[in-house]
Amino acid sequence: MKDKIMPSLVLTIICVAASLLLVSAHELTKDSIAQQKADKFSTSVEALFGKCESTLLDDNFGNDLVKAVAVTSDGKTAVQVCVDGYSKDGIDILVGIDENGIVSGIEFVALGETPGLGSKVRDDPDFRKQFIGASEAPVECDSISGSTFSSKGMKKAVETALNVYNENKEAILGGR
Image (cartoon, rainbow, N blue to C red; front, side, top):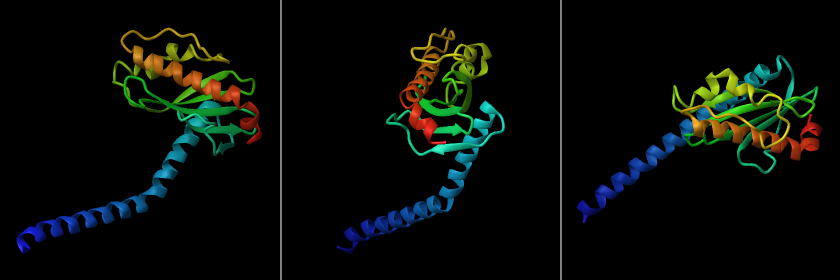
């Protein structure tokens, strides 16, 4: 009987100990991770609009692709969108929308696309320039040869940001 219970008891103790260690590690690092994400977001907003004060809104406006929305004191908006390209959630960008509702810049928070192929959406400045000046979806753009999925993902991300902005403009600008 002891031979049958002992392995299960030992395994249970090991699992409980491992779980407690994981919970402890999470609790010790969660504030640091959150601060690093906030710093990266602030750096990306500054890259879009220059040195400015921004207010992070606590709302994704009913769209699961939107990770964050920030608005500056002069009415510029940054919408962080994470979409699938070739990789699941491979494109994480910040779309800058000026006070007139026009895309004024795109900054990458993270890119998980294939280096040399999908990463062309970030590395090719002419591709990103296609989106500058857009004010509503659908946005017309030429895909990059060899990175069609990534190009479609970028298009979807910009269109999502514009749709969220245009549908919630008063709430976004009222949150400053």
